[in-house]
Length: 83
Image 1 (cartoon, rainbow, N blue to C red):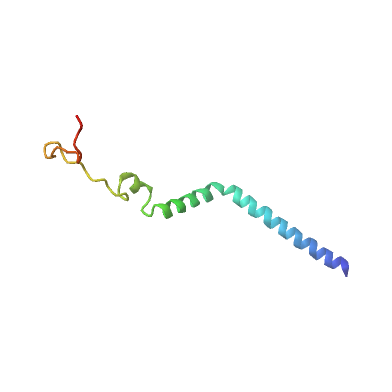
Image 2 (image 1 turned 90 degrees about the vertical axis):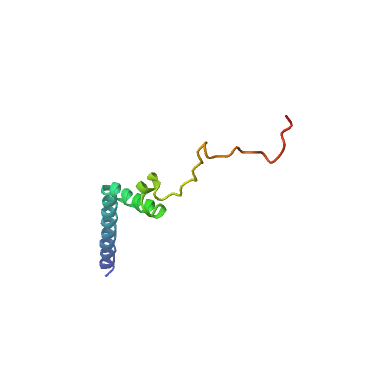
């Protein structure tokens, strides 16, 4: 009776070992695809419209433009100059 219990434990241990080795092999073989998938998800969560639109300025606010020199009035300081 005890031998049947020990054999059952040995079979279960073998199944667990084979499963662990199989999963580790699968992850090792597909590691590049897994990394690319995770990178894509991170970029999508940080920049919902994608990296390309952020680089071209589509997702970023624009800075105000400066007026041209001909239409600009000279700037004056609010304090008087000692010179």
